[in-house]
Figure 1 (cartoon, rainbow over the protein chains, first blue to last red):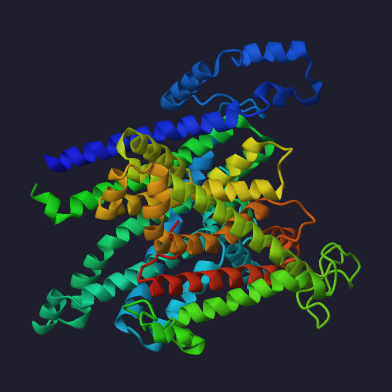
Figure 2 (cartoon, helix red, strand yellow):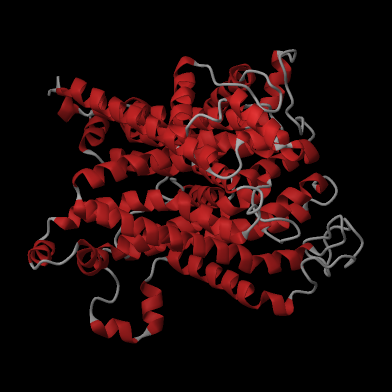
Length: 316
Length: 300
């Protein structure tokens, strides 16, 4: 009962947060100087054409009314029209979101072994040279910005060992193999950035678990080292790492902006940068709302998982 | 990394403070390395303009794209500008913008967070929801829309970059400061101050702030460590400082097309940026250890 209450309360808070996000984005982008109509018309603007376009776009209505109709559109999935291409925003977004989801899934697949293997190696060789070496490597990688890491990977796998394409342009006609080749470098970049945080966390968790009484018990029972490690230590050490993984998902939403741009991958992140350059307001608003939505949901899942996994709450 | 954790802050006994070398030896190794890297960067930033071989926008310093050499350690770009000199000239820009942006974010965040946590009630609740909403927008996305909202007249203005860094950091720092304030607010000395009839502002300044110093110090170092990356990312995407400003992220973006011909023109500024962040991260980790706190590097 209490668990259900906690989960519902936490979910309602997420809804409130998202409403506030929409209010912040709307006021930042719409109330600030220069409205959409003058931006569309640019230098050709005369008071008459401006007035006409404003009525057409509904800009003559007061800001609260416009906010509510925009919010209504967000909920029903009608996101308006692009100012640049006049196509419906949801039509522009759909393939971009598909590409980014695909890229993120690929990145997560690389991320898991990239996190678990180094962390296991470190925990098993605690305070020996392997552990120190990985600590130094993760610390340095932690300090390398994603756009620089992407550029270095590009240098390594495109220029020095020409294996992969430098530009990851794909569209609906691309084959699965083309997609795979195009996504490898951006996915690898994202996976490394995410793994670096998680390795440091998982190493510490593993060491803490390996020191615990039940692991010593398992060892004393004569279980094989492998079994102790994989069946007893790792699952327990992974639970606190869940939170980092949720944080990583949140990073991914921002990270794709830079990484997709570096590799010209036609995803959601590069759409945001392009629409910002073109000042295509409806597209900007929709993409920012979606990125906040993913962030909020990722955090919600992490918190709910923590509530469900907490044995003290389970008994209620 | 060494694991010589210090359980108590060094120099609790007065006599240890007297000798600087012994104090230095007591600090964690990461702190020492970080500090050395940072001091080197600060020295370059402060004195670079006087000894950099060429000006930051001086063209024709060598054969364009001629690569690494003794006279041009980081190579020469398409316009014949010496990249090493540009990196040196850019140093104080990157450091100044990072520190002032983080400092502004720290001041705004600390004041908001501490007051909110102390005052409590509906003001606290509303402010928390609002800050939570700001944090929910990925920080790079928030920075980008803030720059878009500021309009084309302000784009590329260093003041805008400082304000954007502060806008991104303030909510995150406020959340941290608030949790400290909530913790301290129930202590006796705060209750006494309140019963004395002191205003919330004065309680915050005299009772809460001194107790939150170590948390805020670590928070500042942590955020400052990421600020050069944020500024670099904005420059890289074309939303930061304008060319020909020798900002490192912008330089990496400008020279990226030349990476096949002269990789060093990208790796040079990259090395400068990464080493500054490594220094700041090591410094932060060491500082946290000295102050008896734990810090999760890199978690935004």
